[in-house]
Length: 583
Image (tube, rainbow, N blue to C red; front, side, top):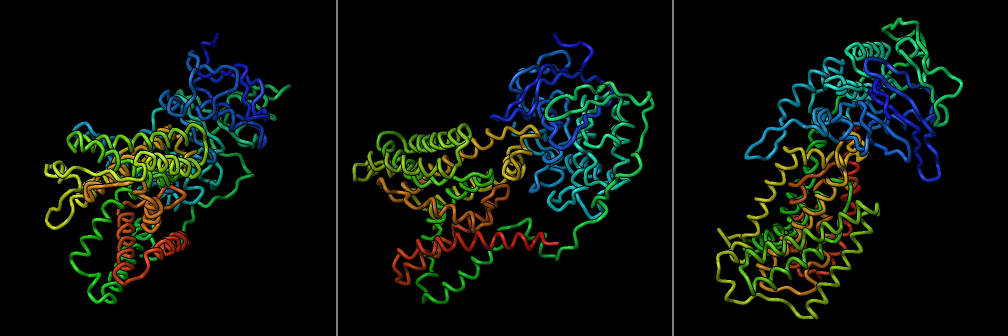
């Protein structure tokens, strides 16, 4: 039975991480309108306990009650919805996102257009700007600046400002004054007292009892995962709650300082990583045009290059989305082939539009299969998708039995077949128009919707995104499904253009798609992608392949070139990024 007077009640709580017993039989009550000091040395279990309260960890045994109701499910989103806001010590901000996007991560304000939610960036910038000015961040810091540019003290100020801004019932502060100057510590402590006086429950976690004893109404001591024995967790300061920071022990942070001014080029490179590949593209065009005696730089060959770019580009868009979450999908080559075969087999029996939908659904099923294996088993996506690459390639070869699928000539006369890669419009294959249309849609989704914000947050820091209530597994699963759909549709368009496909269709295209993304500025670690850059990478690779053909170089050399490009681009990307962020 829960204590009706307690806002949060913890009863006989245990938490195990494998054989490690992190929390041992914890029982404690927290009441609204009081400030609780949760004190203990490093490793005492303070942060672990509050991560249970804010939904990051689910207890092994025991019970947690909130406002008299037993908590049945533990997830940060559920805790945030109940009004529990946590200032995490080590997580909570994604370095790759702007201050405004971090501020509202997990509860983004939206404006709906035709029922579609779009980020209300005006509101996000306005409120986050007010908070960063209130908390004294450098004058040259704006709400659109990425968090990675901030000092440790400034990052902590953003977290605290976010906790204060939203209407909550509980504010948990985990070492909130770390990295702060003396003045900033006083400000944080005053805010904690103000929140308590407004009727909120404030849980103040620290290893420094001298800091909290003048603020807290009650102190709970943690030792080795247990509530301290023989100690009075009803410790008071005589009813005199004082504001301010006790003398001594203060450590100056970096909030008053800042990064040295970057050159004018560095912010541009930091925000637009695709600049490098566009410059490379221009240089290659000049070299290829000047050294091929007109065989490369003619309208027919450029049209062919753009046709190859269209299908490779669609695959690259999907791979970029998966890379954005910090995962990888190398099964897209097989998905491409399955999509082509499904389309050709069905187009001989039904309208090509229905066959195309079926091919896209086949790609979505493969993506779903990959995503479920990655998110449910925790196995690295490289291993999972390497396995599915071979599985679905084997299925494709088995289905064709060494022969190819083709579409009857009668079916090629309809307008749907023409639209689905089977014809040209204004001198260019219709696949190119599909590429441009889908690129615009995905760019809008990535930059202007909550889904895009959360996808990049997951890639930047999955742990921080999870702590803000983002359903990390759902985001990754969605990225894999979208990747499969785009690869399946790319196979459809390629089959429509050629009119036939065999079991080997799409072989090695997975490497080209990944190379396109890396060339285009997509960070393989996740959190930063460029869809225009990925498309330019696809164009550069298609151009190199075409140049080798028209100049009589053996096509096998393209594989060597492809490998070198991936290695050099990855190294160049890292070097350029470090230069852009150098103080």
